[in-house]
Length: 87
Image 1 (cartoon, rainbow, N blue to C red):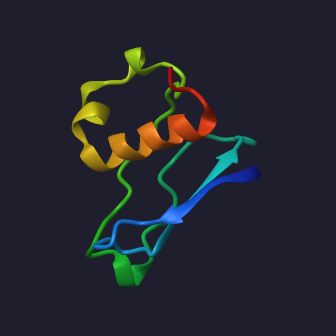
Image 2: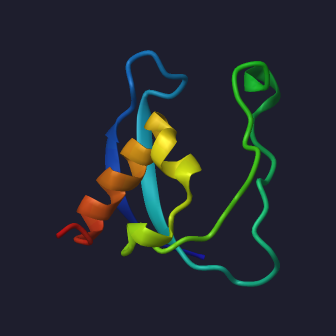
C-alpha cells in the first residue's frame, strides 16, 4: 500500500528516467519479488534482479554489495537523509 511520496528529484542526466520518485509503502500480503519491470522497450537497458528488506536506520547490517554499488548506495544515503536517519 502506498502511504506517501517522500522524494521527487531529477534523475541522473545519463539515465533512462527524467525523475526519480520515492514513496513510503507497506506490504499488504505475499512475498517481495522483482515484479514486472522493465517495460519491453527498456528490457535491453536494465532489469530488476532481486528485492531485499533491510533496515534503513542502521547500516551495520547491510552487506558489502550495497556499499560497493555506487548507484544503489547513493540512493540509500539520500533516502536515509530524507527520512532523518542520518546522525
